[in-house]
Image (cartoon, rainbow, N blue to C red; front, side, top):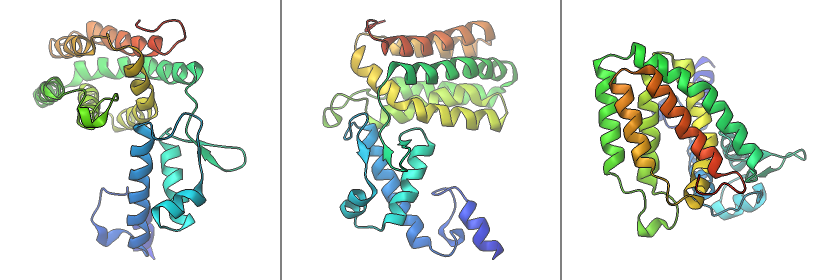
Length: 242
């Protein structure tokens, strides 16, 4: 009984299958449907506001409703779907207010965490930041087969760089908060990429790395706040290209 409880609470995909609980098959199916849904939403296969109908998804994926609902709950928990009053699910609407709220949360939290990271980070943290930025700078942002959106590889490198900047804070609770906000804002960044093609994000990232590794907490926090503000501003009607 104890083993079942531990397996049910483990983070999917992070531990070996031997501790997955009573029904590892269902958990694997749920993981697959979750990955499919997340990828489909992030790549724009569903438009903002589109309903995510469990019955249709179950039929499409050849799985049970229970498996689909479990995957939908995970996607909703990451901010990539909304739970509607009638207990259905839908892709979040692309509203300025929603994205501004997410950006406000990130601008409030992340510069503070970055300041802590600059002050507390050790040599190993510096190495991780430099390596993460090098990977980001060398990864193509766009590839023909992935269309107008940022490539999957670039998106991963982008997240890893931003997280590496904050990891020096040494506070896992703050890093978990970053993880949740990042996922919730991922759609924001993709819409911003479509509406501000002339933005020099690479230069913004170079400034972030330079300030962090120079141990200039003020400059690093200011650069990050500006970086996040530009993303939010680009999504506000009438401010394309800001």
